[in-house]
Image (cartoon, rainbow, N blue to C red; front, side, top):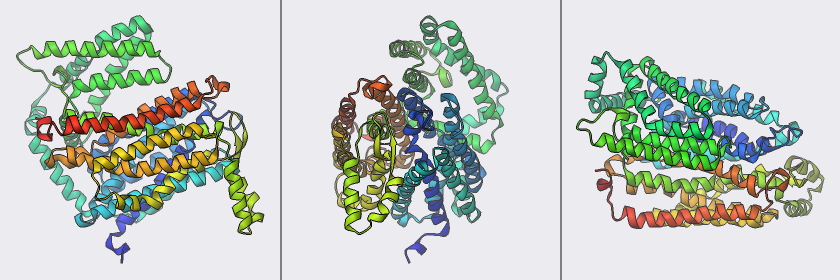
Length: 594
């Protein structure tokens, strides 16, 4: 039988994935409505700009945390890690409904992200360990279908609960969905191949880092080494801090400098106290990051730029000051690198010149982040737009006619009560936005297998390009999103494009990565998703704040916003085309990593 083809642990992992996704999307699909909803209606009453920074930073961090949580899971076991994830998320989802301001909500949402990031690597690891190599394609196909089943069911329940019981129950239901996973965890069995896989990975790490491990064991000056690295980062950031002092004031600048010193010391202390095996796995992950993306000095400039972007996106500094500080940051680090390269002996860590890993792959991730930037607008911008601008009476009229035709007119009022809510700047009887955007997940559940089969023999690159263009077209169609059926059509076109582009964008990695390192490169594909969440969140808040309702300080021209989002999708497709022709075909993988 089909179900017996996979072990029970596989189905348990898929069940837990469904409930975790129900919790996440049950909240996330309505998060924009809650964050920007009026206090009188039970929302937080924050601006679109503040919403965007929350929805940009937290998911961005969620996709970075698994680098650490995955190593901890390998050491302490999957079952314990599952338990830890649920112990974090169960209260965290409930607590998200308690704060009434920006920072309280931000930190409780961050706690949810920490729990989700603890869950992600172990559920994927479980599926990978318990299915045979010959069944991996089918197994992961089932797994990703379960992801979308959870993503489809969660918002439906959340919408009904929100209409009938109010906002607090949205968070309670997410907490309840996670709590159910404690039950399934009772029957969970640790994958038999995990221990042997861990032992093999540890041996590989020991062999690869043999010289470095010996140095660490014999060194008696670890504190001096830590202070040296903190000194290096302060040297690299000194010009930026000076500029920030003049632009923003010396008190916040000195506080930021002190914060960097404290964080650096805390990281070193944690490095000392974690078990040796975890330390070894983290060092191996660090070496992989250096090889694929770049070294620590490279990340000083990269993460510094991202941090300044976050500050500007949250309106904590002006965009003008952000541009100045980023320019000073980059120029300052380039000068430090020039000085370091002229020295006869290279230093360690941040005292080394900045170096990009595989520049082809890093460039691909950056370009692909344009797709994910556009993708996220479906969940964070479109719900707010539907609430404020879309009149769904045309959809409701069609549905009522269908009910009458089927002889179910008596059930219409009850169905209408669960489906609609009177909200928005231009308040009218409207279908809940979360029900409409859920068309995307429903289409994927119904049509992903068929779409994949149709394009199975097509080149991944061609399918990805066409799919990305379709997502851009779907976004641009919302220019006419004042009518409900237009929004439905736009979401469906977007979903078709997503089903084409998203799987193929991962498959394309195998074509541009060195053949012996495809699995390692696939592990860093998530960086493009993380960047897309960050860019998408900040852009969403800024765009809707500017082009959105005049009642909230906008210019009331949302159509321009949708044209820009559509342009991002089409431009990403064009850049990907140029990337394939100019970079991939003229610079082989081995050359890029040489």
